[in-house]
Length: 296
Length: 296
Ligand SMILES: Nc1ncnc2c1ncn2[C@@H]1O[C@H](COP(=O)(O)OP(=O)(O)O)[C@@H](O)[C@H]1O
Ligand SMILES: Nc1ncnc2c1ncn2[C@@H]1O[C@H](COP(=O)(O)OP(=O)(O)O)[C@@H](O)[C@H]1O
Ligand SMILES: [Zn+2]
Ligand SMILES: [Zn+2]
Image (cartoon, rainbow over all chains, first blue to last red; front, side, top):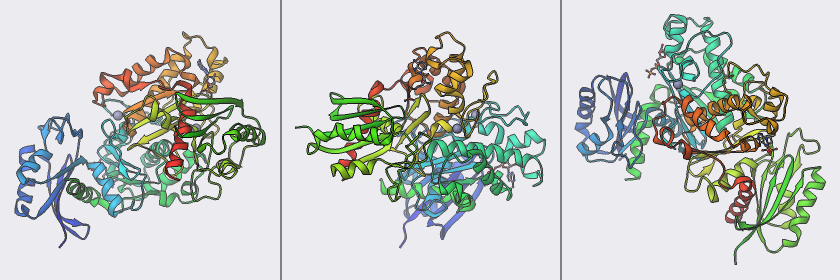
């Protein structure tokens, strides 16, 4: 019999909870993220019938989160502006109530693990998973393992040159129009053009500008990490035409500097969509559960 | 008796060759980098008397270099514009003539290893060593190991926002004024102000601008890798006042986004000079030798 794991993809707008063992064995529910009491209550209720069968639980959470094992607030959602959620204990609640090992990481780190295990990064030791939606974030795997470091990567806040034809003031509360998220997250696109990003038609000039920002950020990541592949997820990549445009422009921006066939000849395999589609997050949480069980 | 290792720090302007076992046991010679025949000849001659005593040789080389083990040109200097050096076999020459294991990596990756073993990154699993001199480059250690990935990091070519008061056209042959090296390497400083960087006085406006570029690049690296420390080497950091200015401006540029005491309270321990001073490169080559011996 397969091991049964619990998984939570905790997003700022919705929670996904699942039990199972992998892509072909996954029972899930989804509900909106409201107050911590209500939302965590629904999650606990979902897992309750599986108590005794689950080996462990994995949580990929929106942030900021505390990932320092020796910290008194390890496993908490910390300084989020999301009403009611600041300084909320998360992993510990499940560990205590189910008496199980609980794996805990950021949602994007979880998704990166999911892609490595079952998706577009299988067999790769060095890659980046980046998601562009309400915010921009990413997980970075180097030497086969997620980078945590000082805190964890915050790819959305890397600095990018302003495109000369862009007069938008930017909307990162910390970095204005200086950082990637400030100019290129979904809400920034919506605010720049006065129409929500998902309503802008495919031939709108928004997308050429967007692709240039994404290409510049990806080129920086290529030069600074030398990943073997970059996986592009999130709502903004829901624009089907974006992928090819980003590929083309990334090659242009690098301008032949990185002399690798992966970029010069095979960009279509270098910049790719998530292999697991929108299941990367929940399946990644399952990998976090597995790892927690293995390291128990 | 200690193991005796051979080490080569192969720079574009000078070679350093040494035998020894660490910082307290190091016999070295330096000579200018001329033709490959003459330069490699001098290096071979330096090591010849130690044949039979050496366990292995480590080489940290200027690039670009081929680090793909399965490539027919592994251990070569490849497409360098440096006259005579394009497509030059390097590691293999020493391996054959001395019949020893030879470790081979970029000069900056070597320096990062040196700092990890004996310098400012002791005990750290995630850090960056960056050098700002004739070019800008760096080594990135994640999970205790150097990142190689697709090729190897090329930190100098990450993209940085142009400072609004800077009209310099930039001088990266690939990226103009878009990349870090294009606006902030020593020669870019010299060209912008019409005076070599090392001759500009400490109160010249060049240094405030320079510190802003460096701070922006470091802030991007902090957001994208989350290193536990960044080590700043190279001639440009020879300006004693730069270090504090860069620390201050990096904190300003991050603007409170990364909520870590390492940045908010202890920036002086977060951004530091190399612990090994100008010996990081040659001692790093010695670590490459050790590793080649251990993995033989
Ligand atoms: N098909 C689409 N094309 C362009 N933008 C989209 C599309 N779908 C969603 N978005 C934008 O992406 C953002 C939501 O991102 P998404 O990844 O779906 O959710 P979240 O980041 O909240 O998990 C919104 O700003 C929305 O306008
Ligand atoms: N004390 C100094 N202050 C500012 N710039 C310096 C200083 N020393 C060297 N430089 C500049 O650094 C560059 C040389 O870098 P360096 O790290 O010494 O050598 P390389 O990169 O060739 O190994 C030159 O552009 C030089 O003008
Ligand atoms: Zn930002
Ligand atoms: Zn460049």
